[in-house]
Image 1 (cartoon, rainbow, N blue to C red):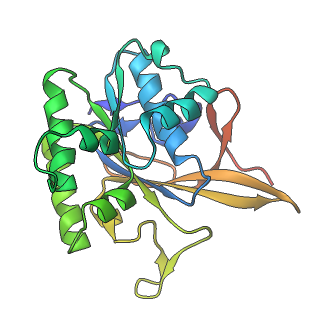
Image 2 (cartoon, rainbow, N blue to C red):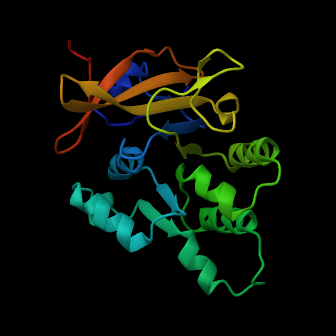
Length: 238
């Protein structure tokens, strides 16, 4: 099995070597847990190793996303032309087709069309929540099932960002923690859960857990997620 490296110090070891190629990975967490930064890192680091990646943004403009990521040290020129940002909202304004063209159709049109000129193997969708609103999902579970089935046919390793409220979310029906609002956790091959946890009396710490990853023997504990000139995953001390 081919594995996609994250190039996060400590995370590939947690994953048992990396992410199985072709996986659909849900990256969920509350605002401020660095979902955007982490997934952009995955694309940027792989781009520097020759693997093409596409970041599809529905919430941030291209300029805003680049300002944010370059502030963290991820400069586009260092990606050697192997990383592309698709600002779908800006493209929709320039779209020459019908004004009422559905958002889901536009997403598929541009992401599939790019493959002919830019054969990317990694894809980030930021975010599922924005797509659900813009595409006006009628039956959320059915529409998500269709989206994930389509992504599998695209033949990429995809990371889907999803928002969760702060703190643990438990399902009364299931009697356990949940990591997605619309039960898309059952459809995904893998789940990264990011959270902010209290550390000491006043501090907060970002933490990451690989909840599941089909085809991988991975550690399921929470680990500290540290950013200091790059991401690092370490054991939680004390």
